Image (cartoon, rainbow, N blue to C red; front, side, top):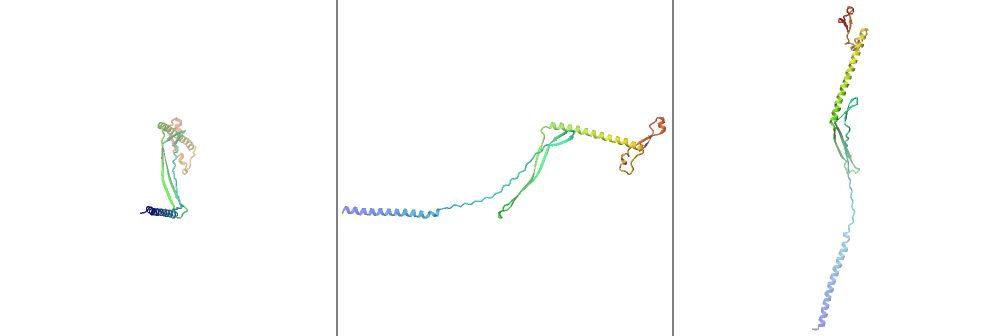
Length: 204
């Protein structure tokens, strides 16, 4: 057997095998790259986002304003403060709508009242002021009684003088009642002479 021919055939078979393997690898790589090249356009994404948002916010608030204490005045500069309760009713409402015909109008409303209390911190001062107010009321009542008494005395004197002088209102006059209860007594002549003034003639 010729060794030289044997090696030649072996080299030929090895070369053919290597060539076949190289060809297969090249074809495989070429097919893979071709498939990737063909699939590349299908994986391209073009982003076109769109978003819209609508919203309405309605803020409604009620403010409670606490005023000063209740002030009671009794005249002559006497004024007393007392506890105060404040009550404030309220009604709130709103209407929301848009130009879009597919949107609906929304209505909202509420009602209620707010309440607050105020109390003086020093109750002793309030009691002193109440006592001073009672004194002032008594003084004013006494002045009113004195003014009434002065009026009645003046009416008695004037009506008595008018009756003595023969002057009076007509019985159908609305002012006839002014002197209707006034009594005038005339002394008799013998009583005047004797100095006796107990027996007198009365006239009204």
